[in-house]
Image (cartoon, rainbow, N blue to C red; front, side):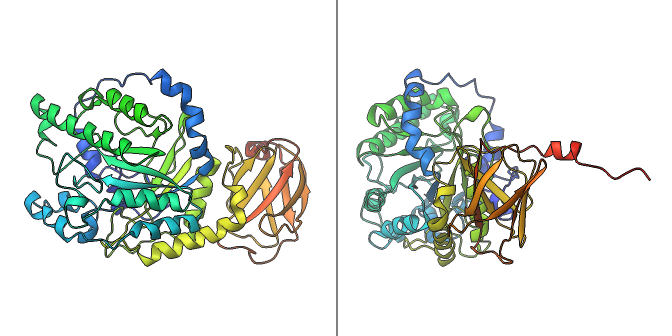
Length: 450
């Protein structure tokens, strides 16, 4: 990942995280000279963006899969660099990497159960090993331990479950002899950039229609060095309906905040990518798993602010999914079975202030996702709309409410939460749901002067 891959080790599984100064990728980025300004977006891509991205905006929730030679080691996806493992020693893992047939089918089935609509798999991570069939190197799955094209299996599995496949591809490469030399040697840069562009061409050509191209880590070159405009032009020539992210030093179609939820200014599309524990790749001893409630809360926050949530699993070397990942995602999927209307296809929501709940909306309909159940009454302060009716989303049971100028109170509720891990109340309003808590602070009646 670009800036906060390793910050996950330094932080808990909090809802949002910004600590990234210990991230090796961040440090590498910081060591580079300032890059020239990126060129303006390609007007052809701008013209088709809304149409290309509609499915993605509606989807909201996706599965990220980090899988490679590091999965055999089980000590984090940065193990090659973190432990300074020599290339010749690390290469031996390629023969040991022997996943079970069609492991991706289990991933896709779990993604479907979890309510995820698309999947993004690592085709090549920083270690340089290719999970796909390539003519450019023997360091790839069909010519090493797996003996077959793992990306082809992934695409087939995603389609079988009605999910949209996407490809992660790391520009940074610790294995290729020109992967660092390219920063100071023009001949090396030419060789390396041709190699990278060749991989991208293969990925865009050999697997049918692909929904997302997810670049990662542009170290050690800038936008001119990578010839990123030329790269993206090739991508769109081969896959006219694809969407691309912003990690090849161009703006791309969407931004990628990592391990944090941060909406982009100006309505720009964004996707928060997060781990389920503190590691992207399989980490044997990492047991810091997010709870289903935390995942649901993150998903709601992303949807509320107009973004997507790309949640990672790190399969073992054999392709099996760690059991806690399965349990958490199945619980989230069970919640979405009864609360889907409050997540997919929602619009940005300006109602945000509550100690107990979060909010999404579609038009004049407000969804209150209550994660800390307050008991028999739940209130929203500062409503700037009139509630017309209310009910429990999962059951349709009517909910009584009382409203005045400063708050709307939903009353007569069960003492204990009727849904797990989050209960949703849906309210129909006379206009777009809005909130002004400053008005409460300014205008509510104060105590009389003694």
